[in-house]
Image 1 (cartoon, rainbow, N blue to C red):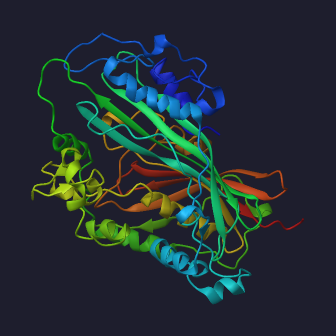
Image 2: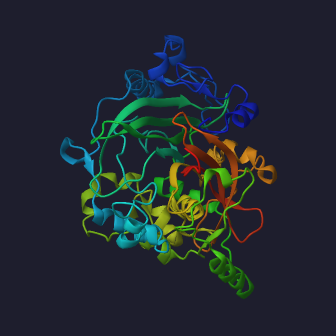
Image 3: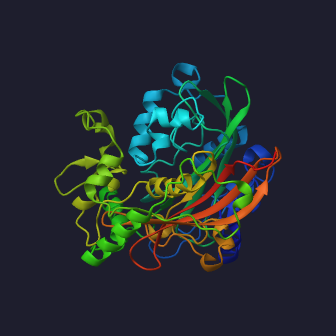
Length: 469
């Protein structure tokens, strides 16, 4: 299954996506050795029109060369051996970390919150909620400096994470880098230089030595260069533009609250009632899960932790690449999640974190599969802030093509303050893996109260008990 809906992307952009050293195949430098790169590909381009420099994929100006070549070399060299834990050791999962994370993302399911209940279900303790614990891959491609050109854009496209087992207190894992990704996604003749940067890694159980998981993740970063002599936009104004394109906030009516209450009342946690693989059919739909409406307090609390009071003092040399809000406070780019309300733009509001919708979509899956099921894959997508990065195919997943009434659907808005998350799903596949285990795939999406708007998509897989064998 592809990382993105490349068919749509390539069809719309033609030759616009050039993979450094790998054509349009999507292969990484580690897989190809970068054999297609030549001095010609790093030659200077001189065509410009209008306010900004125009670019060609794989052809770089003198001022871009060093930055690009550095990242090409890192990608070509491939990932270096790293360890996931502090001090060079493996990461050890604690009961405290499991319970703390579980309570934060799903306080309703007793399997993830009650130790005695979990033991009665046949487990040594409370399992970690999928995606909250485990090793993290090390190493990757350095980010493009935020002040490299005259305008800067960034988006985390989401990740594809697979863990083939429940994780309990006492488990420990290490990560091993598998490949590095550096692709030039610039459209020929565009005034936006855009790169995809990421990595894949494998996770191993240190007790058994077996591979316990796999992950892939990437960002997209882009920039523009002014060539007509116009003054450079301040980084603060550059960042403020991002929230200008957010959809207007949704006002939740009394009638909608009644609908929300009905969804809450009908949420179904399967629990100890086993769902057998044989009893699942393609087209089955899990009971919806409803969360929200989200307030700025929910968003701020979701990230957890408090301010240390030394952030600005420790960041004095970075103020030129920070947003300054209407109170004169310098904030990092992630302040868009917290401080969008302080940006003087009509639609400015705090926005949901990258994994917010994915968490509630996962909650729908764990409710559906019950205590005996194990969720083994979570691949999530969200829509970028900036319209410059809203490329067709990058805010959806191939799984949606297998849902008859959702074909061609992608995320249509970036969720934020005022939005309600309504998680829905559809079983798209049913099969046995190489070990003979029963697996189902579920396409999941998060709707809002506004008809037709999608704020998150997840491709999920789960292992279910078999009646026979």
